[in-house]
Length: 476
Image 1 (cartoon, rainbow, N blue to C red):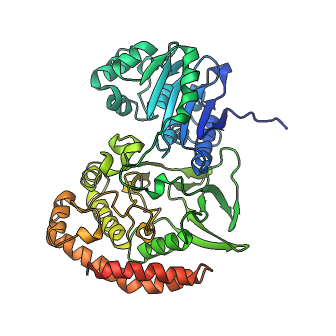
Image 2 (image 1 turned 90 degrees about the vertical axis):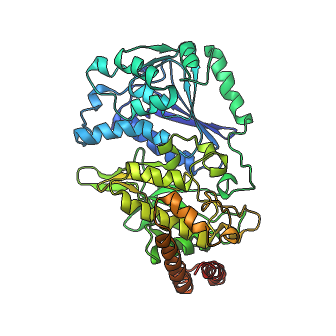
Image 3 (image 1 turned 90 degrees about the horizontal axis):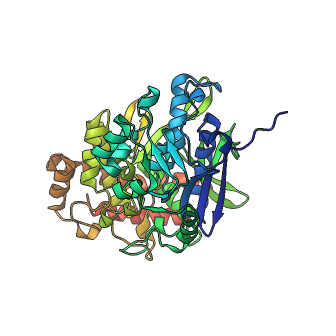
């Protein structure tokens, strides 16, 4: 049997993961197996609670020489279109990562390799770095969002020069035009990377947030005939296993209740299964960014959260830190969604529901666009739970309702302001608030009882149901 050599390696040092493209014999050109490995490693690293940032670099003298052209036509059991999308996924998966991502460009970054660098939140370049779009020189279009990513970073003129004229940008010029944060000598690039674990990459200004607490470990898994298994190399995962958060009581019950309640009142949410195994409680969340393909089984779907779609760095995911707001979210859906009217109403319901249950941590990376068979839609909701149940967490909404950050600040004028942000009629918004509040109040106790049948703590579920029903009552 021929051993298949891994083309990507990773290591974690002091909370920083380094993902290295490891095919120096072909200058780290991207193949379908390499892109599958990148996606699988991202899943694993994001599930590791000890990882706080991700650095991407290349082995040898090149960062990445682009896509291996022989793989653009598909093969490996994939159609031409599926093969192209799989290559795109090699860098778009990095772009979607909730971790701060840094490209350490140690040499030429060509075509799709330049896309990989552009997909990162920040770029460092060695003197030997070369940014070379090269798409038109090869007679192919600058795909994978190249022009959008480049223009967002350096503007239209530099983007046009690199794409239309084939202008190659070295490390020093890349720093001058803003393509990279800093250009350093090749040896100094390593020293700078070693310094990153000492830098605070994420910080909150308005109290502890659940997503900033380093709180929850998540394990990407596959479900085979109802049994949970770890994925093979490059195999797309189908579910996320979420154990309780040790620092906060009954988070499994809290999230299971909130997710089930949201589905009960008609919201689109990721499917959740509460499970108990050997006395240990956990949730099994079905991934909505997957689809079944007759040729190759489970395939990944492209998604991007609101921060990525709006070109906002992940460290600014909270509105108070100049991150996405409901106003910009509604505007985004009207521009991008295939059926804007439908998706705008889904976001309206999500905002109202999170206010009712007291989910103060629904920030710009908890709302996503999903690119699937139905076009561009608002992705099903996930990570729903009542954060106000924990006094040590900030009670202020990650995205304000009009100018209000807590339920206590809501008054009759609030919904007029929120309706204006949503581009909807105020009477309609007020009616929808009353409808959802009534539905939540009427369903809370029954949902708690139903979830308790899975083996979770009935006392905790009743506690959360009572809290949420009381909040709903204030808005009816």
